[in-house]
Length: 419
Image (cartoon, one colour):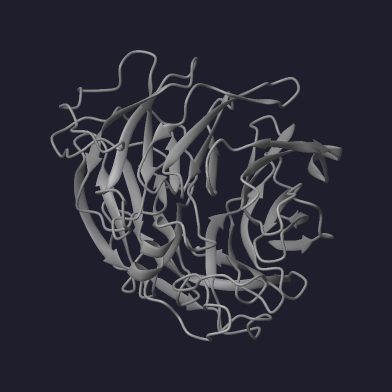
């Protein structure tokens, strides 16, 4: 995707280069990252539950760089769709959104082509009806793009009004797309038509208060998601050390701020993941390498951030990316970039407590994003620097993770979206 106490790290849409006070261009930064010379902190993508069955004619190369065969009319029997995000502007990056399929039993991934025409699709989300895929265009002039799943037709893009969007999500009602612009520290709302196409944005909010945290030159919105109650949407801002709660008017698509929750200065909150019961959430703090349990009040939309806890990382430099919580709420997993591990937590007291159980190797370099399959049986880790997606079987009883075969090659893998 820093802080006065953070280690020296590279900047651009994500942070100012340590000691320089300046900002790199997006393309230069990602190119350096692809060359393995940067220690960056970027964003990732989440999952869905519908099986739209990838098909159609818009094809290019497979996510592993080999020529793609014509896509089948739908995913083979028993196999499920998997979409892969990348940076098209990075050295060695992808050509667009990678299309693949995975076997829920074995975890094996098979490449099925590329959806071209989308620039720097670093984060992906799917509509609740499974018919439309959405991607950020993480560039200086940020945009969000809609793609029809049935034939891979790009339905068009809309400007977010900010720079370097790094996260997006679909409101559960299916009528609104929420996006976060890291570079400008803003969040936006776009209407979704019946076709799945996007309209012009209906609202945009720039995080101007509080003042940026230690070492930050401005706000950096990193995530924009809907709380389980459906009535509130929350924006996580790394630059201001704040989680903002808004009420979304579902008729007009406008936002009204109702609450703020502040981390300790310099924590650098990145991603928030709710427990299935909706009363607690887990926050990954990128800059100070901690996590926190948060209590949530649905009636007011108020979040209360708890004390910092360990990520389990042993490396001198580590940037926690995000949590994934099993569908039954029994276990939580955290991606650790730098330590290159996946931390495993037992979730206790109906979601109110996390107990660190240990870590396992991510089997890749810089696991920027993780996602569970809809049934919770598999965990996917998108490893940015190694250009791979690791798949782990999840033991439903113990929460243990076991690698399911060799990691799948996917250029500059920054997002894995299993459906």
